Image (cartoon, rainbow, N blue to C red; front, side, top):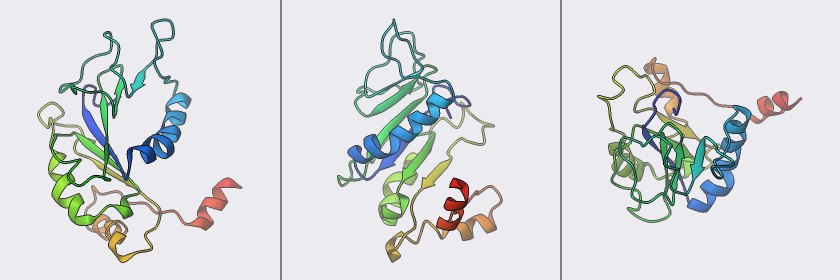
Length: 180
């Protein structure tokens, strides 16, 4: 997203901020590092992104800069990712975003997802008119063991009906094959 949509703003939703910071961000940072991106530490140790702090002045500004950077990841080209948590009722509503990522999606209440989150994925269509990643939603999750979470695997049915929807599942057998 950062490469294809500079200055855009997305959100990463987790169940709690602690879960996002301890479980979700570290593997993302590992991948960013593998791609040659490093966290900005200082002018003596410049980098490509900052987490939870105001970016340096020489980073590009996003189209809609946040007032507070406490729960924000900012990249050098202005791409911003707001970290949203579902642990407080109505704590994530409002805002206008270009895309979204959902961690442990099967644990997200479907009604709250539809009512609070989906309306927010509406930002900047005029700034990225031909970008296929604009307004994209990415759901990452383990398997649902409760009926309330079955709306996520049901997206596989939607993907069969709409060619622009991508859906993928991995089984434990496949995971062990990959590790061999």
